[in-house]
Length: 208
Image 1 (tube, rainbow, N blue to C red):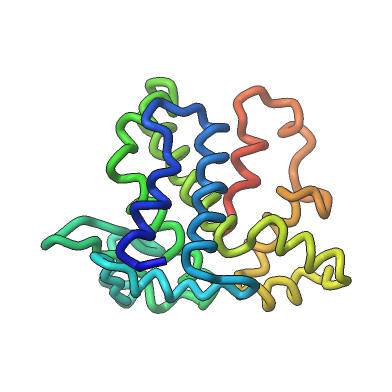
Image 2 (image 1 turned 135 degrees about the vertical axis):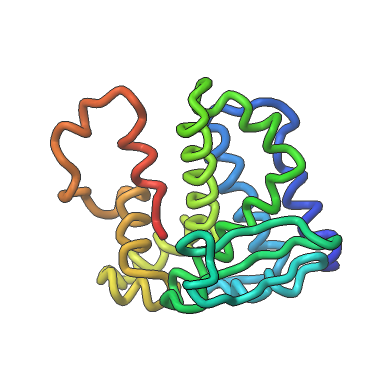
């Protein structure tokens, strides 16, 4: 596929209506799968650097002391999207940040409509949930569901080995394995399993 059409086609999977948080996660996973297909990537580790080759995308690496946020940020400026990534972070974090920020780029034209009801009027919660959706997109892009399950079923079950295969942090892989139901979540407090605020589901999508 021509690079000029990739961002447009992946964006096209976003419904032009308000979404629930669950629907937003579903769309994020569909977009991640479509992006992998459009980029012609067929197995781990995902070549996330291909995002830097897309039209109107400029990626800049900056040292931590010049960053307004810990990992990275994105903004529209001078007719192109600028994605700035903390160059001092580990490789897994840099890769995750680039994918996370690309989701912000994808969502920009429609986020005011699509994410209107997230947070239910609580702006802080609204913003946090958008970040969770972007984290989930990054996890799905770097660690596609079928690829992780295939690797796990083939006998690669050590978290460090899987993290090395997919070039993500061990923490990111740990969280992904929990989300996919391949391992248990022994570190979560018992009380969390009885909360009604969605924190259990949300926490498992955070995999930086």
